[in-house]
Length: 187
Length: 154
Image (cartoon, rainbow over all chains, first blue to last red; front, side, top):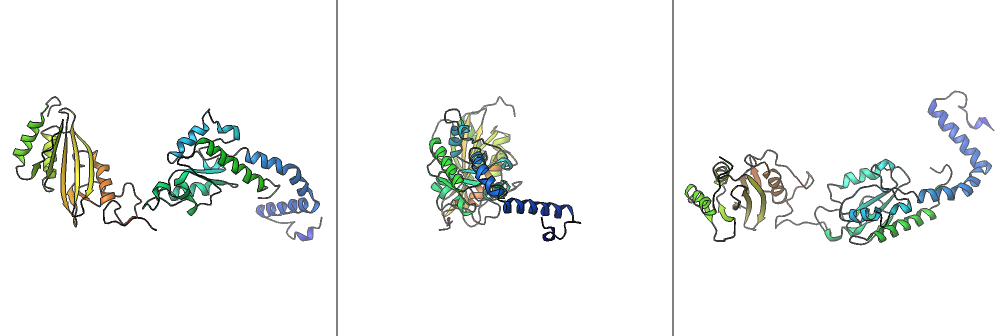
């Protein structure tokens, strides 16, 4: 290994050492082809684990939240698809917006979105979250969540039935699958 | 007053009529256990004090606003649990200066009702402990339920 590419290898701070060692390992993995091999072998596995354990945030706003509750109940049982509703945004992958968003709620919802760790997705469920729905042109309802949060999946309906919600999440599975997420050292 | 004292609708009506001969006008509508009246806005607080202290009306179940375009109305529904009577008091307020005395010092339950009426109609309740926006964000500058309010952004 050519240490002249790393001139501070002898004396450096802790942060510099972490950066340096990370770069060294990255260089080795990329130049030797180990990353390509690992991605070939482990990438699909990581991607499979990622899309089969998407944890939505347990954040109910309006009547769509009842459909969300019905979907997580024993009849539809979304835990079959790895959807476990978590109460902290730090533990979540999906922000499920299920209801109208008032101007008063908007900064709090944006903050919840910012608090979720990457990779994260947003699902807009129901007419209100998609476009304002019955509250079109209202003085206090945000006209669609996509005006302030990037939305991946839209589930139409007023409210959508649990089957529609499950279908939306299976489409999110497809989206994660084709996005090739889960590569080695890709963050 | 004792909890056990009960009044009939006619007794309540005659007591109010003798205490406020000109300020309170009764309406002809007759419903079981209901009494409808409109009151002068300056006499409202005295009327409500009498209702609470002498006639045992212990519950203010609703305060709401109405925009009649030429005037505002503040509508009070006041109940007596012992006499089983509900009064509906309508107070007319001028459109350019909708101010009326707050009844929150008498019935704490009127607090959020009056704040909501302020929020939606801009009716000022004088003497309210905390007359701020209740449902809408605090930086809103309009009152959405007024008839002349242009809502929407498109």
